[in-house]
Length: 419
Image (cartoon, rainbow, N blue to C red; front, side, top):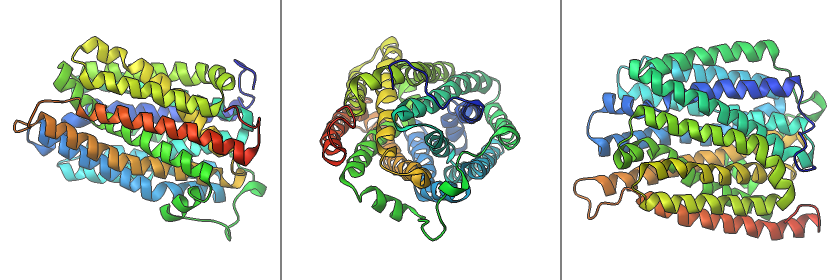
């Protein structure tokens, strides 16, 4: 694809699926700034206790995603993207309702479990874009989904931070309403992208996370990409799980500052994935983009580990998002070209399962480390300890991404991918 050229798959159907992602992520982003406070209200205890509870809730969500994402992906290969996407959006609406009316902490656990089961929106949207894009356009196509994700992430946290100061549950009521509006919007306007002849035959269909992980490990290239994705996502999910707690503890941020910082993430993602990916990736190639992107994010983690200045915390968001925004679509594009149309949903579901596994480990590790080093009985005070670990492991993910470049040449031949 020529640098800067708009991807060829932009049409009314893809615009509609991108709008669907924006609305969905706006709803999800609405309750991110206030969910830790709601957990603290219902669970009681100090910041260390809240961190443990919040980590456990994040693990429940991730476990359900890990178990069910390959199933949802396989169902979309067999029955089409549209019905699976509509079911997933409906499930996310009921997740928000459970959170909105939660009388105790167990309702939060139940709601997040439901959200994990039906949290297939992003992976099905990626499969949709893979259906309608050519191989050389896929990094840009996945970048557009990421940009839609980021746009929702701008609107949602900003609204959530403001509405949360009026009533802590008001953002969640709003999220529930948006979810069901999104279902209606998709039902009326979203077209199917996977033609019947390209669907997976029922006799060939595979379900479950064990089959998904075995399938990823069947080739050395997809195995390396899966390992790199697992490490990087583990560190990212860890960051997300403690960001509000960490910035409140380290920089004395409230819900408004947390909401603004998450909106900065969204703005950066829109710019990087909507504009820069289609300019940078064709110039340096997908493999180098993976290695460069994860290395840049690693450097930001190391800065956060030792930083005590609020504005540097804000500024560090930008290089992190630049790195992630380039590496993520490149990794997905490289992997998506290894499979045919009837397996795109399964691939995206398998990757979502990997992300779910990472989201089990990441919050558990991050909240555990943060809680340990901020507790009154800690051997020494180090709230940024997780970011030190994260920086080192992200450099490892970058190295594995570079190693994947050798496998690209071995499997595909010279010149197939810029490495």
